[in-house]
Length: 231
Image 1 (cartoon, rainbow, N blue to C red):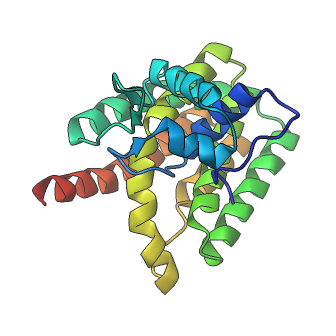
Image 2: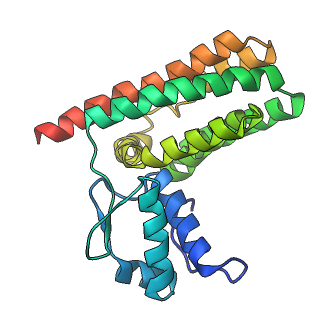
């Protein structure tokens, strides 16, 4: 399953493997906001010594994905409406621009890839696989952003999505029970509209639908943050 931690393969360095698995898990919301990640427990999970785990946590803290304590353990950042709004303001600007640029560079092969990802996303929703579904959502977005041709924008977006991880956890926790009852849509409405606009070469509409996609999730997450703060 996407984001599930596993022993590190010998095909990569141990430190890089720990870092990449933790990074992917954080980005799809595998950890709770405020959760503490200890070096010893992670080392046991990965089957490694403490050193590569400590290095991975330092790298993730440098990317503002984790907050490291003086004792060496790390915490997933807490959520707040203010931080959520700040992240989404930045996302709207850079992801909207990347979508415009991608539309101008879109190819038939890239459009087919996007349609395939959306179909996979919807199938996973039917099968009630919430984390894999959220991973397909991420794959859809980044397939577009890579098509923009801007390495700088892609790096900024990647950083923003990593910091968005605690909110993805809130989203997955909210969605999972609704998927079980069949009462939740798979969040692909705007994705279809984005593909349609890109097929027509309409960069303005593609950007507008991407912003609407971000704003739609923002609205739900704001409600979840406010509800959590009242408890």
